[in-house]
Length: 66
Image (cartoon, rainbow, N blue to C red; front, top):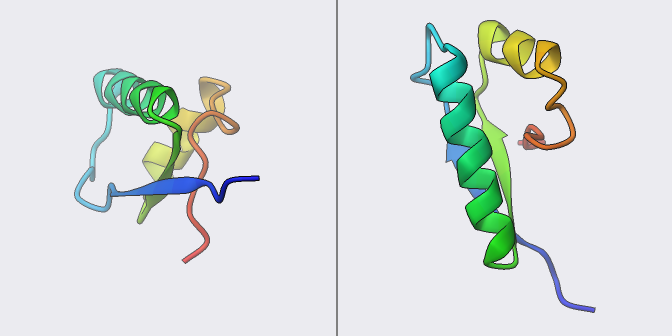
């Protein structure tokens, strides 16, 4: 079994994220998965975490444990 390739995306500068940002992250995850990888978000603030949860994307846009 291959080791998963993670793409860590630092989102700490998204201080006032909106649905456009969420859509861009979802497209980035799709691109990563098509290439055999997985996107993990680093530094997500409370507002972005809330948007991810409200959109039902917590499994699609997971946070990194670092």
